[in-house]
Amino acid sequence: MIEARVFCSTRTGPQLLMLGGVHGDEPCGTVALDRLAQELSSGQIELTAGRLTLVPRANPKAGAANERYKDINLNRVMQKHENPHHYEHFIANSICQHVDHVDLVLDLHAVTAPSAPFTFLDWDTPATRSWIKALNVPYALTGWDALYPGETGSTTISYANGKGKTALVVECGQKTNPTTADIAYRIARLTLAHLGLTGPYADDTPPAQTKIVRMTKVVWKETEGKLTGAFENFSPVTAGQVLAQLDNGSTLTADADGVIIMPKATAVMGEEWYYLAVPE
Ligand SMILES: [Zn+2]
Image 1 (cartoon, protein in one colour):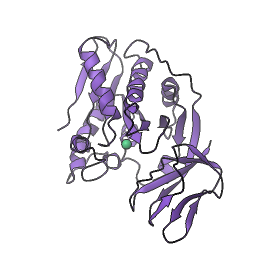
Image 2 (tube, helix red, strand yellow):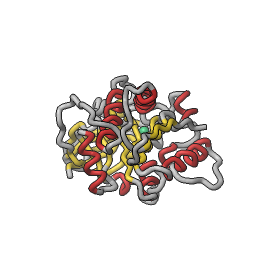
Image 3 (tube, protein in one colour):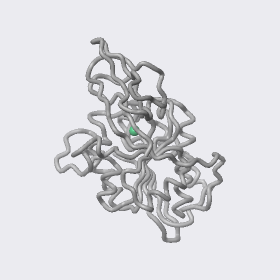
Image 4 (cartoon, protein in one colour):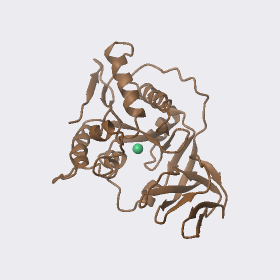
């Protein structure tokens, strides 16, 4: 069962869906959307136009266990399943129905390493660009789809885009840092203001010029070993720099000057370990 809270203005306007907890170990979206629901219910925030659907716990069983997923990664199977057999297939069917009935989707996530907030610009449209600008995030990543050929249609964003919706995923910061929920809340409020569902939101964050960074490589953990430094997300790397020391004696190096993306020191065998990216 998925719980959705729906808030309708008496004035027509955009229909927006916000998702938290698609990954159960990323509580920032859940905390932010619970707070938003409470503030809308109490009248502290007024919805001046449109309709807002909040799903704070998109993967309830994983969220309750503080685990990324129960059976399989929900954000790789976000599509309609005619013969659902994993827990996340049933969840995806329910979330996709919500997506079908809105114009726009915001999906709130977090990452493993310390990180500034960032978003993805794989579906590059004027509407997406102006939304990103309104969020005042330091980074937007491109190139995700090229790293996962044949798997498009399986994330929240690709499902929504395939249905003609405008959608953004925002990685709000480090998942274990409680302040990441404050950033998720800020992203949600800025989105509501930008899309005209509420009045303006006073953002006290200094203006950021969003840097666009293109992902060039995903490195899977295929041999035991460890990262050579306490990398943060967007830590700069130089061509030839050793990034991982493998137990078999060999090393993994950076191909080019750029940044390391979403390094996961705790990655297990078969998981994404880190990505490499270059400035656009
Ligand atoms: Zn996530």
